[in-house]
Length: 313
DNA sequence: CTAGGATCCTGTCAGC
DNA sequence: TGCTGACAGGATCCTA
Image 1 (cartoon, rainbow, N blue to C red):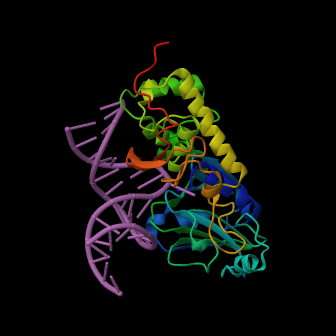
Image 2: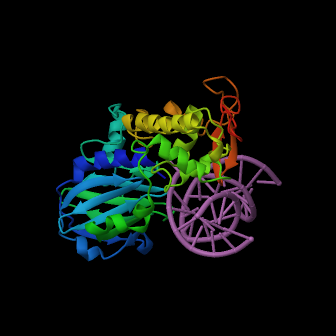
Image 3: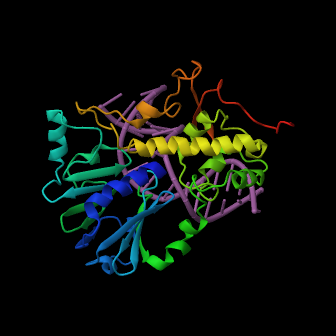
């Protein structure tokens, strides 16, 4: 799914369009995509958008909140009334005035990149449609793993997902991070980076990218990392996510080129993710793709050092 | 307690 | 062309 930088980009982008608006109608096309009483949010005003890890939180005027998790294939797309057919984006693309972001005057899109960003909505993957005062917010999700959940604002912290979340990478103390890794005697480092109760917000892209940046092989034994190595890894995670947020998230910036062809952040910034069989930009060796922690994993076998036992220094 | 695998669901793509 | 299996930017549940 969209990982932390994508969700943060969505939060910032959506804020410009929906903050302060009243929810007028909710249409649910897939029951498993919307949890809780939808009638509770009708007529309520959107007062705040925030984020914890990969979860987007939308506070409403009646002490109720929406927790939105996009999981693997979720998308949030806002279209002002009259723009539901996506014609504006198509026009921008054709006239060459399409810049780097999927946000125009009348539309904003973020999440798993598909054609739904610029085609007619709702479509077969639309699970929830929320009518606001100036337009529609569409929740699309191919695989139905994601969801929108209604809950009292005061109970967000007790939510089973939120409750287990570790600190955000920037808030995590390097020494604490090191000690957490030490507590997992046989796990590999990639599995722990993906574990939201160890560090919040990292997914498959940024796990691979952070490990490349820190020059650590994803198969390394987490508990074998030295203090310095775990600190470097934490810094690398912050660095790659900061860079992504700055560029508008991997699914946003340059996803579409002016000619309508697809391109994206990955092409521009990723050093290893989806670059198997290509040359490492650091050493020229060939990037490989293997399976680690049950996930497709990309690495440079030359640059990234396999750490199995702590160095005694 | 940890660690690994199966599972939810739909779509796409490589290989026959 | 049509089928089949593998795989997918996530998290949870089940098992040993």
